[in-house]
Each structure stands twice: as structure tokens, then as C-alpha cells.
Amino acid sequence: MNISIANIPCLAADQTTSAEDLTYITEQYPPYTFQEDGKLQGISVDLLERIWQKMGVDLNRSIILLLPWTEGYQRTLSENNTVLFTTARLPEREQLFKWVGPAASGRDVLLAKRDKNVTIADPQDLKKYKIGAIKDDVVVERLLNSGLMREDLILENASAPIIEKLEDGSIDAWAYNDLAGIVLIQEAGANVSNYEIAYVLAQNDAYFAFNKEDSD
Image (cartoon, rainbow, N blue to C red; front, side, top):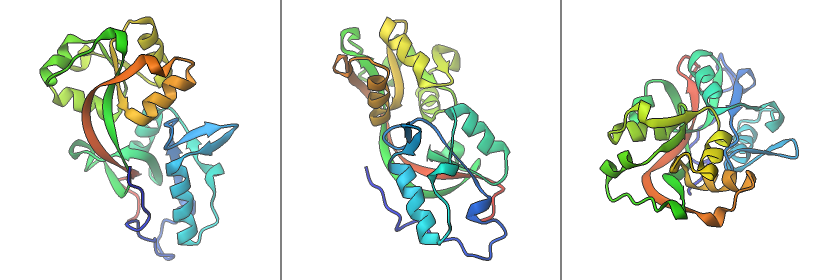
């Protein structure tokens, strides 16, 4: 995972939109962003505060909204002066947002219980399994591009119901970021040693995604 503020430019003070005008949105996505003891933590939150410091603005993490991914994604698409992080940059999304970053890199994978014996040699094998994913998450597009249909997937608005389905066996695998998925499974009280990475879908860079009407 590579993280740097060196590639993130300072915004000029005379811009019509300032850092203070923006609404900052994230999700429960450890270790990048997560709430602990009522306070937002994580790699991407730390990075954003460093950016604010570099810009010389008096902002801190208390103003960041923690929302379910689908809600934050749709809000950033539709509302000016919004920024969503941390967001995978894909060709399908390129014209939907303005991008700042990269902020981090990670892997999208299939997480499955070891006793499910999920075996995927090529994308065609994905059709053999019931796969859960979060609506509007990058992995949904990856799965569709691999030949699956949307109706083939078990889509939820958040991770909790997907982890419940993993635990009770009603789905075979969860398509998600590897680090975030393992942490969320552990936080849900499940035994992470029962899980494995059954398949790597892609390596991707993640960015701060701004509403496309936001001032450059």
C-alpha cells in the first residue's frame, strides 16, 4: 500500500470554492477510514488532515460525515461541493467525478470461508458461486466486467448483512477490499482464521473523488 501527499497539490487561496466549503464523506472502511470510540480514524483520515495542514486551513476530522457507501456515493454524484473518500478510480467512473490522488492502493478480492472450498481458475468460474457485494462498490463493476449479471449478485447497502450471509452459508464469497474485509469480519465477531482470499479480482488505486461540478 503506497500513500503520499507529494502528488496532491495545494489549492489556491483565491479559489471560489475553498476547503471549508466542502462536505467530506467517507464510510466504515478500516484501516483506511473507521470510527473508534466515537472518533474517525484511519490512513485516509490522517492523510486528509495532513492535506488541510499543508493548505493552511483550520479543519479537522470532526467535520467528516460517516455514511453507508451507497448513500455517500450517490450524494457525491448529485451534490456540488462534496468529496468522497477513499474511492477506486475506474474508466467507468472517470467522467463521473474529479479526482485527487492517488491516496492509497489495495486489492479487490473474494473472501470466503475455507470450508466452502471456493476455487476459481479464471473469471468463468465466478458463475459457480453466490457472491455478495456492496451496492455501488468498485467490485460490482469488476464482477460485471468478468461476465456476471447484476441479478447473479447478492447486493447489500453495507457490510454487516453480507458478513451474516457468509457466516450462515447463504453466500459463498464476498467481493471487497482485502484489508478492509478482514477487519470488518473480525469486528463482526467472526473468526477470521476461518476465512481465506479465494481469488484476486484486481489491484487498484484509490482517490479522493469530488463532485464533477466542484471548482478545480
